[in-house]
Length: 182
Image 1 (cartoon, rainbow, N blue to C red):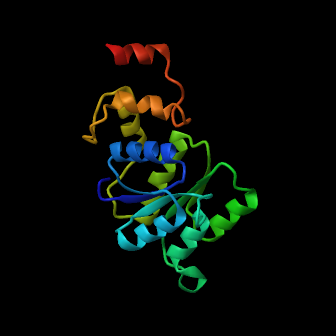
Image 2: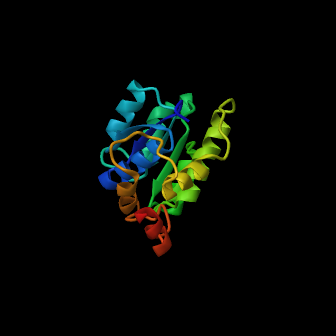
């Protein structure tokens, strides 16, 4: 999965940083943007495989970023994108899908749905890629502490308290906490 570079744009710093670290630990390269204009600039200057964009961001919305990177209706360039929002209306979600968004996910994000969406996007847009249903398995292995993939300086145990602020994972049971302490 290291061959995939994800543009992750969200104005919620803690959510963006937590999601970025999780994706890195799953083996992706991640380029972060805190707003729409930065997302467009990065996508035009960095090799990006696909994006995960917040719908509501300063400067440009995720939908406006998607439109800019697809070149408008006259060019209609492929730019695989998952849009996310906690406040988008049904009509905004439908507009995003009409404009070429691969999927529209509602916040709070749920890990299984996000991981399935990323794998589905890769399988559809990168048919030669060697990826199977491994993201969820890898995330589970990271969750229970069996593997450490990223080499990041922060220990994995310090990441999960951050993740629990967002419903990526269900709350840990007491037995999970005991297993980590041993």
